[in-house]
Image (cartoon, rainbow, N blue to C red; front, side):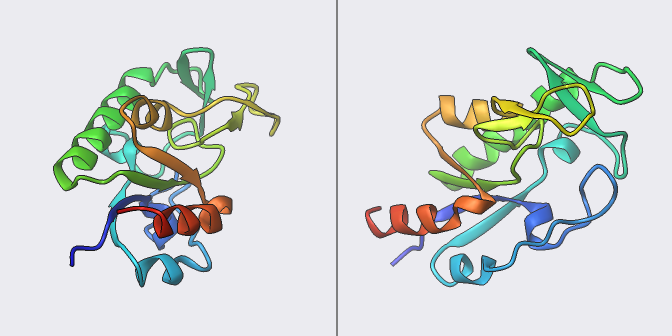
Length: 152
């Protein structure tokens, strides 16, 4: 039997692809790996941004980096490439890095670069959700595992 395929932020798997060149390796990812096939993605890298890169935050519909550059186009391209991978591998779920201007689901940084969090989602999370892919942040891995119990 084929196991479900799930997109996962590459940084959560230990890949040094975050804006600061580091990773945010997730504890407990092994529980998910036992049940599904993981497809690592980094939408920012897929969109052509380097690692490391200046931090960026959403400002309305735009994504601006700390230096004031508009990087929206790269974020949109990365979201589209991530969706293309989801479709190619028939991934119906995604486990993405919380609060990211690309991957955040439900809450993100407010665009002030002051660490404030607001309701909202990242560019990739929004696009995946709009195409019927269930997106979870890493703190919701237990909910994802429960959802997989009901997935056929």
